[in-house]
Image (tube, rainbow, N blue to C red; front, side, top):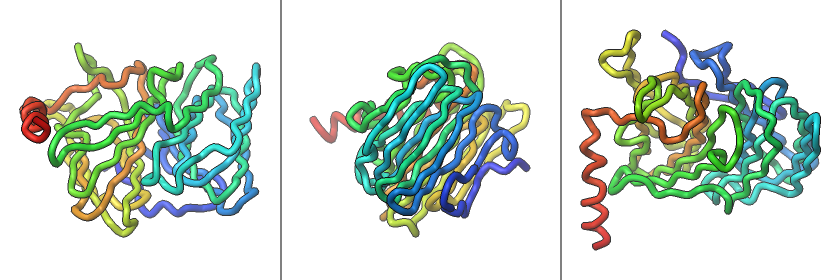
Length: 283
């Protein structure tokens, strides 16, 4: 059975690769972390034939970017202590970029990558520039930030963050984006999780449609710093009562279109009731 959850990921100084097409079912997405534990620590990286999105989970740093046609310097970026302390700061890097991260405090950064031929410039997406949406109702209400969407001319990557209050569900009603249709395009995805307090947990179910050629149905125990690979299928998530649950979501495929998914028809009725619940709660 293919490995779809990566657990106990040690936070090591420098860059740590976590998942890629070499160790998973993914075709496009690579994900890893940069960690610089002290002020003035430094990391140098290259995107090669990939575009990348750097997500500052916590801490402050400066990032210098060099492409074949331009240079950019983003000084003293990162405005939150951890992912639960504010909106994200992200940096989009086109293929052929060389970049240097210089820590101004201990800093942790997620690195999302996908093959690309984009000629777009580097882009700093500040916290106030992230699109913010409150999605769902009642105990499937959650907050979603989209930082790298239509505002950035990437070729494949779509990147954002979701926050589940204690006991709440997200990616609900369950949706998938693994086939082509009027409202759906194939997109693979990874979720990288944080939990507050860090000893808490959540659960994720990843399952395919009954007519899938290679069906599977798996439930994962989600703990702090775990990563789940979603090559296809529905993928709802729930936070345990008493614990906040965060995940960075990264999407990539042949066609780049956020929202191009379809809900599990067995549970689609839940969405129909959201307007009724919201009206009952707020008048």
